[in-house]
Amino acid sequence: MQVSRNITHDIAFFLPKNADSEKLTALAGQGKQVEIEQNFLNRKLKTITAYFGDLILGDGETQYFY
Image 1 (cartoon, rainbow, N blue to C red):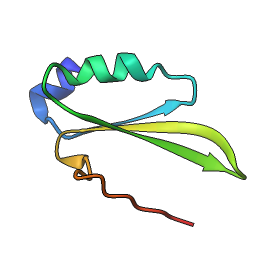
Image 2 (tube, helix red, strand yellow):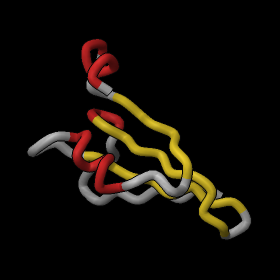
Image 3 (cartoon, one colour):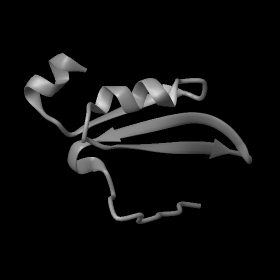
Image 4 (cartoon, helix red, strand yellow):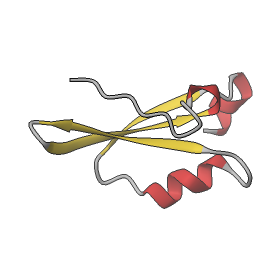
């Protein structure tokens, strides 16, 4: 994460479903944000994606893809 932040603050991590959301929140740092997206296939949670920086939708926006 630190190496990536030397290049950009806009980072997305594609992670397994059992990734620890508390650790992802800690990676954001104090006062910063992380958006955690759950990815489902056939109604089953398969993976999560964590977004940092300007990749966050913000303001509670919700997007649905079918």
